[in-house]
Image 1 (tube, one colour):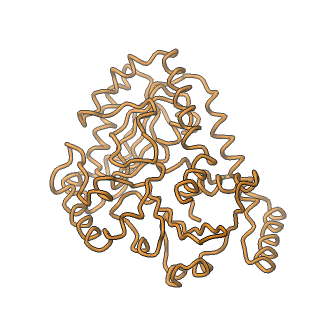
Image 2: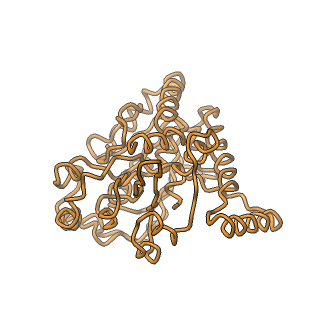
Image 3: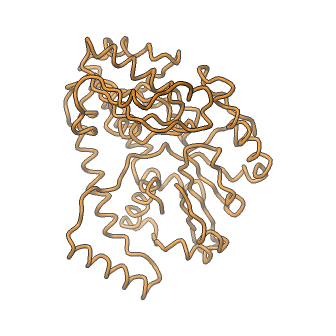
Length: 366
């Protein structure tokens, strides 16, 4: 399975330990054994996972798609019985129309997307009934901790033995890494309030809109505790007018002081500020912030998770100009900040904890 689906993977592992399911991992080369075409093993897959749910009566083929947008809807949808996607839009998958996007996006910002969407609808819409909503792109669960050569050698040997004798992968070390990383993230919930805004960002996806956010933060940093950086990235060719007259010599854009430990400092900030992700996609740092619980202001998502996202206490960039930031910084007192954190943590644990995600997928199928 691919990294963006590690939260689901983690949840399935935990359900295995709880004896709710039997969880087995195999290389993608074995997907044909579950009924997928052999072509899958030779293709490259970004943010896709292929699963099979086996019980006494039947075998079910499942694809989990954590791509940034419905414009990446996989042609392998044809082979699946169920297709769970982070980029679920009822306009697109139920009504087979292009979703309503942001009022600040001009026609040439979305022309290519409209064309791609029309093509996908023509080719795949007869299979859209298989598509189910999933979750926002989850916090990164990849551990940065390097194993020593002896431990890594032991893991490699155990994996080889498991593959040879059982034709499956040895996933216990991955589970241990997930547990450590997840505990590290959750420990940040205990941090106190130190800053107003912390944001480490990259110019990726409708860049002028992101620049507008950072210019707003730069102005506010005169009177508020704001540390932000926007790094250069070549604009995406299909972002239309959003690419016009952007000079890489103007980057990085800085506000305030240097960010030394982004995740820790973000957990100590009054407000997470997040422009829409690439292709309107979810951003895992936003979901990380909701796991910690801090208040978030963001472009209103055009994608729909399996639960009502408005159960979280989030604020939206209603006018597209980021004018809500200053009033929110004035409104959110330390006491209100703690209240929002407690609420968001409860919602996160209810719908986005590893076991909750795994159970949702299984329940939907069975």
